[in-house]
Each structure stands twice: as structure tokens, then as C-alpha cells.
View (spheres, rainbow, N blue to C red):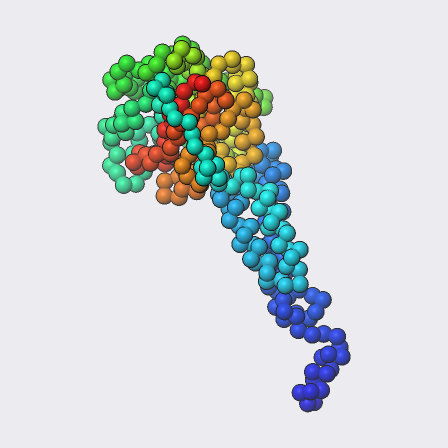
Amino acid sequence: MSETATVETSTASGERPDPDGGAPAGRLGLRARLAVFLCVAWLAFVVLHRLLSNRFYWWGTFDLVPPLAFALVPPVLAAVAQLAPRVRWRLTAAPVLALVLGMGGSGLNFGSLWYSPPPAPPEAVKLFTWNTQYWDQDLQPGGPHTTDDFYAFLRDQRADVYMLQEYARVDMTRTHWAQARAIDQLDRLRREFPGYEVVIEGRNVTLSRLPVVGRSWLDTTRWLPADLKEVPAALRSRPLFYSSQTQRTDILVDGEVVSFYNSHLFQPPQRMMRLQNGPEGSMFEVDRLNHEMRRASYRALQEDVERNPHRIVLGGDLNTSPSMGIRSMIPDRLVDHTRVLPSLYPVSWETGRPWWRLDWLFTTSDVAVSRYELLDSRGLSDHRAQSITLWPR
């Protein structure tokens, strides 16, 4: 058969090459089908994330997606959509909608581009809050990092108030609940910070150069399901390691009482992602515990903040990224001061892979913030430290 006859036969059959990867007209080619799958799959993920995050413990694995992905993936997929010319305009709508739905959780700090914080008055207070990663244990590469280095770093901050987390030691040779060991460095703290009041509750420490007029800890167990309320046997000698994730210290600042909440919440569920069971339970049981403990910690905080008549400052390691649905449980009275940070994408964790922000500062609206920075911790922790200048309005 001649070449001309072949073309005529193909045309007569109604089939002709298609620009979407060479498939006949009426069907999408391989490249186009792949583009459709990727664009629709990402949109479905974003929708499901908004619906399921903070509702079900088994979604915890997806909570760990770096927040910046919600801003970066949609533009890439919008370009991918162009691989399907016959449906590209309808297909482009999928990543555009995903961008709209996910941008609020991307962690991008657009306010830093135009916001100018107010100048600090003479009575302003310097606050320093930091997850110490098990209190001067040398767990980061690049050491040795000594105890003297640890305390020198703290002293160098010259803060009026310190809120520090993980006042404990970790012993990885023990089973889960027994790993966090109580320590006593009260005498050293008093030597290093003369004139400061030292308040210790569980694994949280607050140091204040200003007068302390009240102290307490928030009970998380009241909000836990019945089967999780009991303190594990391995922690009965130090029950606050389980029962409380937030320490409250009322401090007199320029004649006003300000309540400083020092928080360190449980990690997000992640055992299912690693397919890792443990002696304390299956991966499903551990992830459920972390999920319930995190929600209970926020509920304890909501209740205390609601009935507290004073000005409030909340800071610490909330183990909560900008994209996690549990952020909706932050008490309504509190204001997020992210816009004071000088970074477009502020991150606080982890050393070597700075993709997440887990450490936060919130205050009531009657507390002003003029400076807010995330500081390198000199290899002493896997968290950056928060340094803030604030004062009661």
C-alpha cells in the first residue's frame, strides 16, 4: 500500500495523532494522564489535610509535611498541567485551588515585608525561651559542647525572663517512659543567675529577674480519655513529666502582673510513618497517645487562659508547625507575633534541616512586641532559641 493510501486510511478511520503524548483524539496521552493525576492528587491531599488534621491520630504522618510545600508545590503543578493542552485550563484550576486552600499553612511570613514594630520603651522586658534538648547533653554534632558552654550561652542572652524546656536527661538505653530522667541543677542555676528567682515544674524552668507573684502548672490529664489518665508506672517518681506540659509563672512587670506560660507539647504522631512499635505499645497506641496528649495540653491551656484576668505571654516548643490543624486550638485571646520576625520563612527546627517552625510566641493584645528573633543555638540544641523584647501596654 502506498504512503498516501496509508494516510487516507488512517484519516478515514477517524483516528489521528494527539498532542497529549501521541494517543488518538478523544483519549488523553500518558503525559496528560500523569499531569491530571498529579494535579488532582495534590488538591485532594490539601482538602483532606484541612478536614482531617487534628481530628484523627492516623493523619499525624501527613502533618509532618514541610509547610513550605503548600506554597511551592502548586506553582510546579500549574506548569505540569500544561502537558495536557486539551484540558490545561481546567486542570490548572486544581493547583490554583490547592494554593488558595493551603497558603495559610505555608509558614510564609508576608507581614515581615511591611510591618514595622513599635519602638521599645525603657521598661521593656527581654524574654528568652528555648528547648534545650535535654539540658546540656551534648547530642549535636560538632562538639564537644560542655556544660560551661551551655550556661555561657544562657548568660550571654542577658534576659530578664528565661523560659526553658527539657530540664531533664535522656537515657536511650531505657524503655520509652523511663528514658527521660529527672535532674537537679538548682544550685548551679542559682550560682549562674544570682538575683533571679528559679521556678521548676516538671521539665520546664522559668528564671526571672523580676518579682514572681504566682506559680502553677497546668494539668493535662483532666482532658485525656479515661484509659490514658493514669501516670505510667515508670514516671510515678516524676509525675509532672506526664501530667503537665505547661508551666505558668505570674511576674510583676512595671507594676502589672503578666502570666508567662512556658510550654513544651508532645511530638506529633509519627510512629506509623516509621512503622515502629515499641515496648510501651504498638505504633497505633503510641500515635493515639501523642495525639490525645497534644489536644489535652491545648485544652488545659484554653481553660487557664480563659479564666486568667492578667496579661499573658505564651512561648515555647509547641511541636506545632504552621500547617497543622491543631493550631486552631490556640486560645482565641492570644495574638501571633510572627510578623515581627525578620524572616519571610521563619524556621526553628531542626539543625541541618531547617524546614519546620515548632517554637512560637503568643501574647494577649495588651502586650506589645518590638523585637523577635530566632537565634542559632551554637550546636547546643536541635532547636533555635527565641529572643523577644516586650512590655505591657
